[in-house]
Image (cartoon, rainbow, N blue to C red; front, side):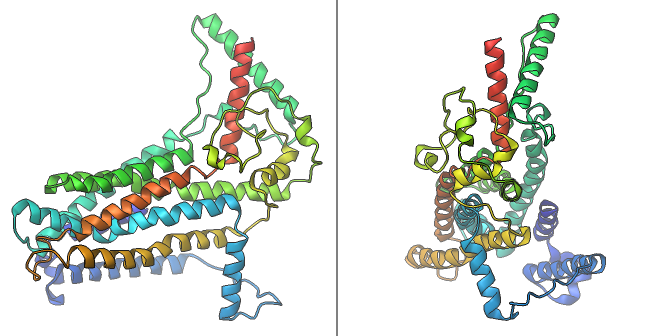
Length: 419
């Protein structure tokens, strides 16, 4: 729905709204009329939400005063007690949106600067704005396509998922997997074809890293862009990264919330449970060495399958924290803070860059685009921040489902080799 809204908004922005008869009574100016149409659309959609949704008022706690200080205390407490996996996602989001906000704020202005460079003069604001909005419309269409295709690339093979039987322990699951692989191998031999085991889908963390790397490289490509067509291609390709940014972080957070809740509700296990596990494989690293110490070395995709009862112990060993359930709304609120905070950072950084770059430019001060390069440098700063965010995204651990899928696949491969 976000992508659909982008398409509607950028379509309106790319039109010459001064020629729309219904909008002539409201005066001239593209921006004014876009704002008017946005107001009408927003009023309609918010009214529909208010009329169709019903909320139940939450009872106030006896210790709650309900004042501003109480709200601040609740936010502070939630931030300090945020589970480590979710905290890492928020850190990545800060760097990611330091990169995103320059693009979201200044993509149209950058198109005007490129147009001015190409024609060797000052374009009209209307022409530059429509060219930028058209490029953003193409970016939104790309986002819709990518946002539709990507979930299928990350779709999980049901043969690698748990059967959902809470009574099935480790030995029973291993026996079931081995029997299943042997039956597949016998069937393949009977059909005269090689055995094809299930394949791991693209992991959410890897997709996110790829999206940030692509966005950072596209922003750095502004060094080489000199025509409107090239700028349009760059902005359109950003739609790939935007589709990932609108999906993957939220999916990861939801997975981690389920993991924390499951660990908190699991019964405690004696510490010697680690000693009772089968050690059959050597370690294959899934994280860079700088972060590898954060995880228990025996708890990797190459270790045997874990018993359901060890959820709490595994969580504590991997994060060093006691699992404490948190309300999903509270976590998403903190996640939104991590997204909003970069706006203030970019406001300060962009002001400094414009003062340094454009104030010293030898051009007519009345020009909006011609002779200006400040926006390009702001976009490059954002690209650098996105690349830093990509590096930090490697510290975001795979979700528990992904780790269990890799362990089951390792068990399948061992069974195939041994039989």
